[in-house]
Amino acid sequence: MTAGRHTVPTLPIALLRDAVAREAGQVSLRRVAKEISMSPNGVRDFLHGATPRSATRTKLERWLSSKGRVTRPPNVGQFIRLLNEVSGDLSPQQTEQMGRHLAALLVESYEVRRLAPPRWVRELVRHYEPRASTGASGVA
Image (tube, rainbow, N blue to C red):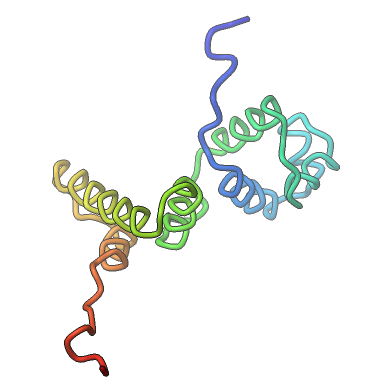
């Protein structure tokens, strides 16, 4: 066994499926299957919701990373879906707090590198801003 051969999957299945589907939409399913070293039926089944084995998932991630390009920039919806997926055991308040902290960390990371945060990060910060309560002006 060579070093680095077995890697821990890095993408949640939903994001991996979405990324593979976008790439597969550019070319034929047979071509994608050949590039990944999978059967066309295996690729199709994955795209339709089948959960891949660990080795297959690694193949899919390696193939995707070999494409070496981002098919679209990240967006707030993707981030929120991912955050909801990884925080399934937390309360909605804890998930929102985590989102707020992660958005602040992203802003700080860009600022440390003297870069302006991209639009999707600024939108994320706005999304997680505390909502104004209507407690005092609400109807009794």
